[in-house]
Length: 445
Image (cartoon, rainbow, N blue to C red):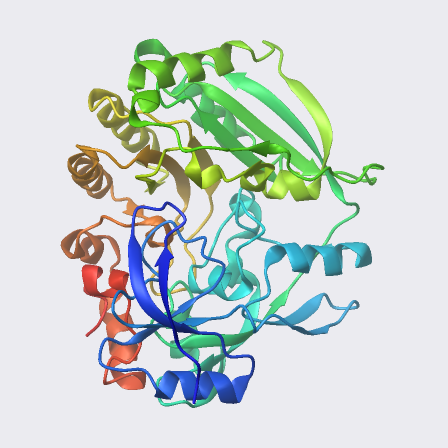
């Protein structure tokens, strides 16, 4: 029998908690046993704990931790193909493959994300306009179904399971192994430029005008700016560098040492902080050759980043809009946030290319705009308004970060939901795999 321990798990945003029985199988037999021991409340898989929302929580149920499924099974330095167990994180991966001239084509903003989580959420990065999302580079997965059967799924074998699992937030089963193709890189660094942007129009126009010239595009937006300054910020434009940075990056020294009180998060205070940050930027911009680790994983540059909004935590709202409506949609979201006097340190903008392959994948050709908001009175009503705006502009919300969306909104945003439910009904007819998100969004048939 598996060893189960009562544990309180939380989201990265610390806005949702779940009391769950947990176990950490170390091999195929242990994983099969854990799944078969799950009870009526169901079981879900929990990787690096970096989901902002409740996708990997099952309050009152059981949770499989992938921390012991952490081995790199094989790596072909000729082809760049790598096979990892699902609990391998991006920090371990980078340490192993960079010395052979490879990097992962897609990463999250923190190295603590696992390979299994990257697939289950079909993650995307600031180079999405060039390389797409994680699923675009995945060759196959080994998935443990509710029955205990381990199946290989790819575009040519069990393709329906592959496409339901990609971005399927763990509800099709537990990913045990992932095979994906790495990206050859000329060095351990990137040449980055940082330019101040006066407003949202300049930000969007510069991003769209730089899609062909730059591999990485990432805009920091001053979420507190209004009027003619709405959407101002700084834009990071970067390409992989031809030569290494000679000095290894220092470990992160910035640390959130305490949880700020609610008063410190008052919009007036946040406005002064973000205004100061913007005004300190050199008018002509600046540039640097930066090591890939801090460049790819900016969240890790501040230890305890998720404590920045205090003990009540925060919600992350990640919208995406098609090219035709991206400007109007993003402006409407920005205006709704400022009208609600909702404060934030962090808002970002990234370009996207065409849709992901998963039935519930987030990306589309256009632009993504994401913002973190403190969990406080009024944010739920604001979220409903952002849902309405996003729907009105033919956009969608990224469920990997979601904790508030309604089932009705989700169904309207994801037209392939019924296909997803059909796969679940066939491979998990008893609903053994369950999550708080799955119940909230009505993902089960």
